[in-house]
Image 1 (cartoon, one colour):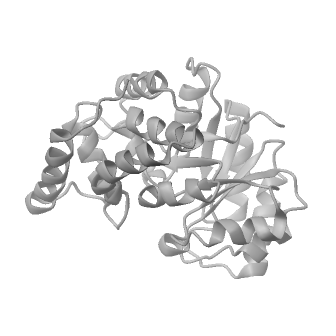
Image 2 (image 1 turned 180 degrees about the vertical axis):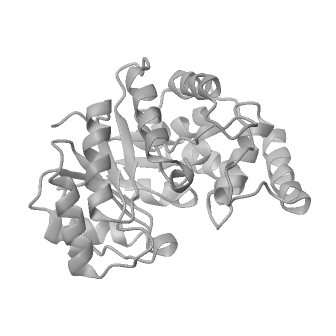
Length: 300
């Protein structure tokens, strides 16, 4: 079961679409190489940034098979589970494990803000369907269900749960979880513009968004923090911060995909019901990017 080294930068990869709304496999392959060349530490597919909710089940499994067959240079492949029912989540977990996923990032039930009993039961039931390790994903702002430090303490007895992606936008959660369960879980920052703060509190990794367009800068920030070179890390972070803010808000997928397109490593194409940004919205993103590129640091 212990297939995943839960440490470092794990990109939440976007799903690339063709003009005809199919999956652009060539673009996916090129983007994988772009991430690997930058030195990322793991790969996450089918998350919110991967437009999970717009994909049919067979498309999701095709994506898992694609990455499972690819030369990932030994990096773990984590698949996001974001289903509305326990039955569907368990069926997908089994199928994705068979397709080659090394582990899963598990969200609470979608479309229904479950209470504590329901949420914890859901996690336990889905994890019991496979032999794979799980990263639990807490994002109460986006999904309406808050998994508290006390809840994670209740889940600590199940060793299938190896990591937590904490996206409550409250860095106090990191020491609170550790106070209750020590180093039982690997703790990942799940909010791009809180990365430095999370690293200073001992976060074990970063499930990153803007990494899809700026992987070298993302990995460099991680490396500087791990080396204790905080002044250099702070300088890089302050340059990066306007871009990292694009990972926040209801149109973060469109914003990040536009950045990918503008720097030549992807397409702004999203699937309905999402629409590409209006001219005014896109102009704002373009301005942020242009200012960042003017002062872009050299990453060796």
